[in-house]
Image 1: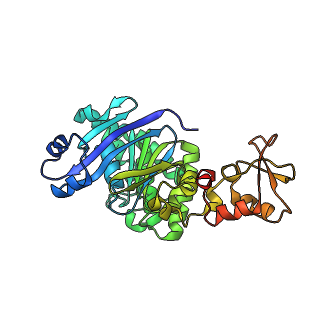
Image 2: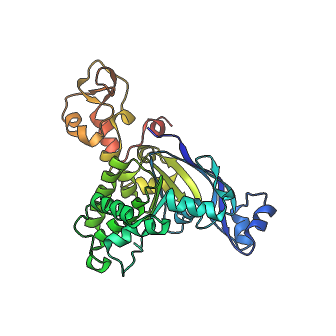
Image 3: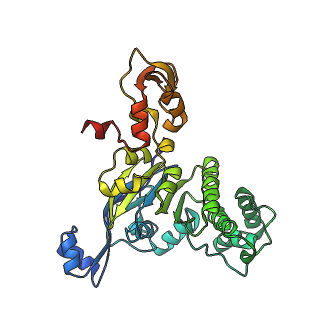
Length: 346
């Protein structure tokens, strides 16, 4: 379950143009798309509000130009938003001094970007230890912490290698180890795997989940790949033209997309791995045969349901109480494109 809110964003706008703040004032902080076009401004982020909870993986995704990377740069104040509110653990991020902001970036935020940004003249150990060196940490301590991070990402024994001697996946692991060396509270990743070939990318996704199972970080992750998002995320925010179209769990996005734009992203999603039995179950029936847990993904119970002579009972998480039933038609519809109960009822 998600923990306390760590980052709170309200009504964020990032507008590019001659006088963004003046433009926003003239339009009472809520300009229309027509006003943006007429006056030659670009609304890269438009009226976006959301929370990031402690320990969750929140993925922000959208097509190129949707505003997802600009949004993460606003949160980390690499680019200040034009208007809006941002808090980190109750502190107003927009009122921090330059010194306070640098301190948070060095000690509380970890960042990983698509271009690995490794220092070519430094070996793996020196690259991982570099942010600790910037913090002024003594050499013995930073070397010790760097070695632990290198082992954590599976690069033990390659401490003396230079970036040119590593594969793309190994370079990305160095980037991840470097960002973790500062022991951040919140981890920001902007399309970290998009430059990797498919096999290495899948390997890095699995590695990412392994690390999260041990570290329990709060993570904001940017991607344009919906399948990657559904594999990694607790919640997904989908952006279009600078706006957050829908923010929901992968299951909710697949079963009840907010509009055709979201549905287009979700249409080829691996539903069998995303949708749970509880999300599509019907009312209990006395004729039900066998039983499956409501928490199971439909792919794991599909064979049992599809080969049964009738409906199959659905139990609660404890397995002690029957809470519904599921049949062939329901499973088939869910796997091949049917929506959830809310959409079917509509």
